[in-house]
Length: 100
Image (tube, rainbow, N blue to C red):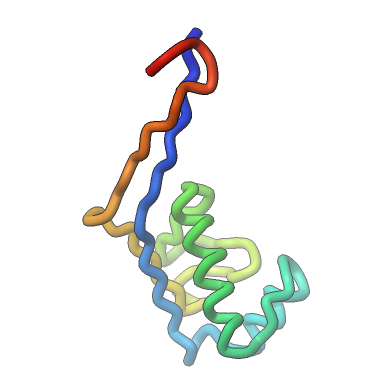
């Protein structure tokens, strides 16, 4: 059996409407999921969290989807785009089974 490992990189654009994604929403998230705080840097942390959930396929972030910690995506002011113009696969040496 041959096993291979690859590094896959993709670009995800996160848009957060700060008029909807409020301090109250962040405080609810902080109590139920993880404490990212409520300052300007909290937006970056939420962006990273949302990007990794979307990039890994854990959540689709469609406007009507309910996402734990955020609620309904459109009601939370979140928009997620997986950008097709940047996708990279880097072949690594095989984990097992000989040369690639």
